[in-house]
Length: 66
Image 1: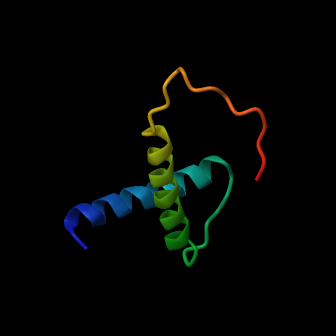
Image 2: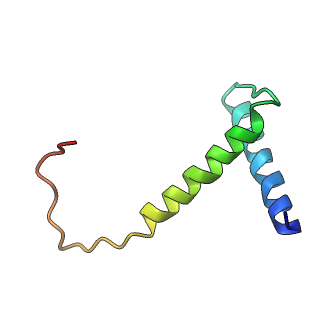
């Protein structure tokens, strides 16, 4: 793991702990690595969605069918 990865991991962990504290939750130390990993994964997914160019000329879907 590089120094940048360690700094980023520590920052992600601090954000998770602070966010949990803000909403009145506690995260057990044994669960913290998994919570941090899920946060990182969800941020990557969000970046993919936000990075997808959708022109204004696209027609909306009429209804959703899984």
